[in-house]
Image (tube, rainbow, N blue to C red; front, side, top):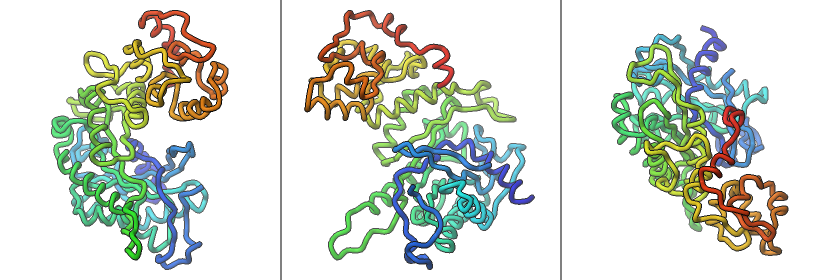
Length: 413
């Protein structure tokens, strides 16, 4: 099979992994790699190609591929499982290096996202994945972004080397409970995954330690941190269970991101899997709730869910919380503290920071909020300004109906 044929198969096979982003890295120089400081290929500044978004809004293009879609594991939800009849292919280390450099030189990508099925053994597979990153860095002075998907059962020394060459590492927990993982991915072990995450956090934290006068700089280790992915809807776990695990992973292992991937049925699927895909809107709501946990001071148990523990699909999680906590509103934007303002539907972190800055100079009116690009229709029932106070207090059901997105808006989410 020629190189383009392999690329078609292995780029398509990689599309199921959502934990692909390019953010938080640092500038890499080529000094000590056999090329001059200002030479080398690629920079993290400024058919297999995916687009991820950095926190500042930049669109980052990555070559996203598997080293191989052969796999000895039998994960029920995975199209590349051992018993699958999918067409197989495998790159050599040199072929992935050639593709990465070729796409970069044509200005198609800014980096590489590399994962793989498990072949021979976890250690052998990890050695092959690391070989790609090491060859790019050492032999070619590649300074672009590299994200490696690691294997928790691999030798800790291999994980340590992966962190030396990669900007970001990730291990997918895949499912939110140990029971679900045993049922759908019997070769995987939640305890082993967490131990590997803990080792990676130790390496990341050690690399960020300040250098003492006269001391040696700690070895580089995955400066963009680590991430993971959970499949949503493959097992019966509700959103609250998923978010509880996410909260634990952020706190215990310092993850930069947890990615959520709505389950989609695959050919020759196990009878234990659902026949219908999980709603993409559910995935979207989980991302919104995740944002509230990380940047808005919300706790998992605060988020409004139905009796089964799932998020509201009609309203975003912050608005759903506000509708259940009407006694907290209206909030006076000229007097409230930052924490209270962050809980107002329609106010984001940037908007709140601007409000706090402007009100040092003058008291705000609704027109000032409009100037700050705040949605007045969304915030009006929940705020007091110098010239506005909600005229009446409609019951939560009436307000919910009024603020509900139109069917066309929901369809676009």
